[in-house]
Image (cartoon, rainbow, N blue to C red):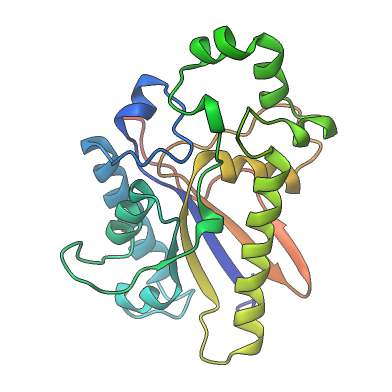
Length: 228
């Protein structure tokens, strides 16, 4: 990999009780559970081993603070603070960007799949999980479409790249704590021929590389916490 490339490491927050129950969270601000905090610690161990081995030029985990960004939702913030070694009791700045928030699902938030199908119909659910071009327009009443989520995330990525390219003091490695729905939108955008839903487990980390004007994105995580 070109050492001058700009790298974004996007990772899904740790588990919450609603994840375990199969409830769709969207913008509902649910905290991490015990397993979610453990997953965040596992992400921290990955970052230490991966970034501080010399390839990224960092000498301590604290060097990553400048490039640490999070969705403002507490499950992402808590994951980020653990993952990059920020003491949750300190008022050390963790940059937030609402564009990394989970999809606003409107009236579907808080429902299980079965409850959603009962309320909106099987067709709405199939459109939501679909992978055709038309599925980018899918949304629930009062919520965002999949395409709207993709577009705001792409703009956030572009802004990070622009900062790295124009400001010599800006990081060239960014870590972003975000959400499963948003990550799926991005991954399917970069892999439009993928015919199966891309799996994004809690705590999984994906690498997005900007090099010579092009994005390189794998649909497979560079790290995924153990199942148990």
